[in-house]
Image (cartoon, rainbow, N blue to C red; front, side, top):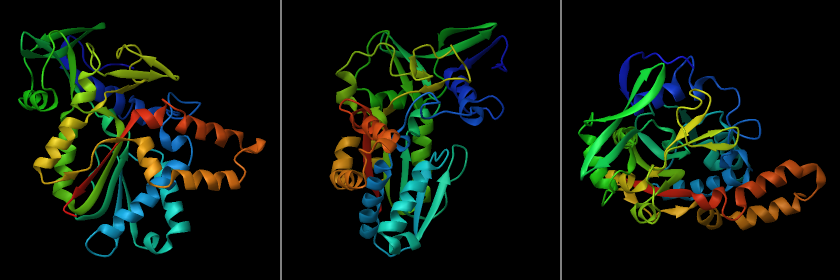
Length: 329
């Protein structure tokens, strides 16, 4: 990747945004294979369709709770290649045809505007953890922003914060700061929540992502924050190692997400794991159906391995969080 800055000082957010989303060199905009065995990591939709089936059954329940009949918006943030949306629609068409007939599916990528007057469901899977973040460091009870100096190589230096919202974010998301520790500040997440609030008439918002609330965050010492990179199914701690060729993520601060949205009048259900959500919405039933269809047959080895990846203890379903919110329902 050729970085466009020379002898310049930039924020980490600007660097991350360029590495992931530049139209000519960005990771998400130009990489051929991102997910699955040929890519850099797995996401739940790429493991097995049972994930989408459970979501679809939950969506039917949420559609029924909305105060007026369809048509319903089904807005997916960060749809990517569209596997999750396709599988959800397939499940609705097969099992809930009346609901399916009234659904208007709207995939929305970063930089695109969601529809106006949303009545239905807004959902995302590993969308917010891929938004560019500011990085800051605590210094003697003050917050210093981490900048990058580009001059042949990349070096870090500290300076004043570029946006007053950074300090508000830190006070909202972290009840205490540890000297010398680094933190990520996701202002784009706040902007997305506020923009959705302006566009929603009545909806359920489901967020599936890596993340934490305050109690979980402070239970583990995190001197370098939660920023991680993924390259060829390996975790990379250096965000400058493979610019444009590796994913860069930061865990979602659900403390900030819920407190920001609740100020707007949203109602949040308790944060839970993906596994708990799947069990609530019919996982056992779908597993029984898969067994009846011959999931153990040798010719379905790839599907069986995908299901194992989805459900293995301590794996993706235990580490991913689910947040369900009601907006003027």
